[in-house]
Image 1 (cartoon, one colour):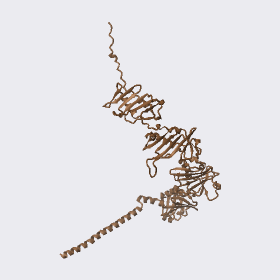
Image 2 (spheres, helix red, strand yellow):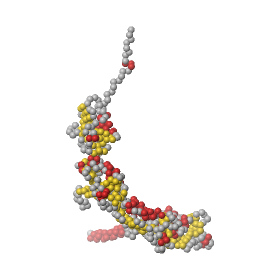
Image 3 (cartoon, helix red, strand yellow):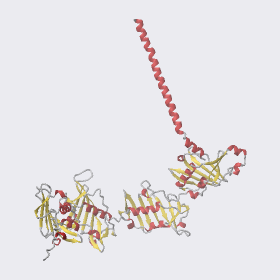
Image 4 (cartoon, helix red, strand yellow):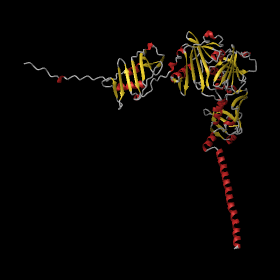
Length: 631
């Protein structure tokens, strides 16, 4: 038993290392296999696919466009060098200037797609030493060098081949010669100035945040705040975003007509020693700005004008139209909107006509109420139209920049004042509870077709259309909603209609109409038409307070109705005299004031409720017996 126990103990240690060794071996082999797979996969990804490899084999030259940061063109004794810095191409030799990036990008694109049309091996070239000279590749005049990571050898351009549109090319380190298209030669066989960017600046209008314009009459400074422009000099005033944008675009969209000279010499010949004017464009990042000075007109090119553009350090000519910016006056750039209203902030509109009452309109969700009339529902569509009208109203004239004599314009005691406010029901970290006015417009004296006006937070006096006042209702009654009744026809239970006589009906237990006052057959069609119009009656507009001339004290039509058998409250509509072509004055006892309804609504309300009786049919001739003959 002792030996068996000893043998058992010896057996276990012998098997355990074997299992561990097999497990470790498996892990090692798996790791090696995974590593091989990853390596092969990496190599495979780095290698071009079959189609790509075929395409590359057909190319004259293969390179990565993104890794090219320089181009050198040698054309005889002339050298043109281009460099890319910060994703912008510059001409470095023979002159330093901004390069035409689109032209260079096009060259690199053409190079990447430049294909061989035929190949003459180096062995064939060596067999006939005169071949390189014959192809113009022994000492070629035109050479192209690409600079950057993994750059290809320089490309040498030889003579045109017998085949139309083809030429001979080779690499600097190889005698192997290719027959290829002439497109690349056309791209690079240019004068240095052809590589210069004819777009004056790479700025776009949206990037400009500040402008200083110097003209013969003075200096104008403009500053963009948020989405809108302001004039800072010679006065502080809101700017016209569109007109200022157009002014800036005249510079950012300018294209150079001629490259004249650098700006280090005598500039008197160009009228730039003492320029007629200048404009400087600033961005948020560029505090120095891009300065454009405007000089004289060339003797031979009267449609052009000399300019100096400081960022590029050169004198150019631009189209003469650019000098129009020198005629700009501050008023040309001022915002002609009477008032700008932030509708997201707007909660209250106060219309105050001294001696004629005050109307306060309040926003409630997406609708409006008349706060000064116990929050009665307002005509929300009309309120929105009123806001749009004011938003779109343009100043007809800037009268005074300093409102020092308000009585002269009737603005010390204005005839009308509009106040636009936000409203908070309780104090918050940002706002205090209550009404916070953010814009106030006052209207003074009328002068012909204009009326003087002023924004309370600005010192200016302006003139606007006299007709604007006619579009502003100062009577709170006229702001009431246009819906007179809001019922469904089937809700009306009892109905009384009075014209030259009174008729009354009610629904019975079967929902059928029966006479309370009247007789004969009831015209169900006419009753339904009357109910359809009455239950959802809408006014054309509100006329204002009720006066005798409207005729509603002696109405031509009076309709009284209730909306349920148990309804103790009746609704009453009175229609008076004509209010104009196709309209009539009307009022309801539930609402103050008189409104106007359409002729078509009145006709529906006056339909006869009694069905017309059908006449008895006349007897036919056969039914009439002939008189008896006398004997």
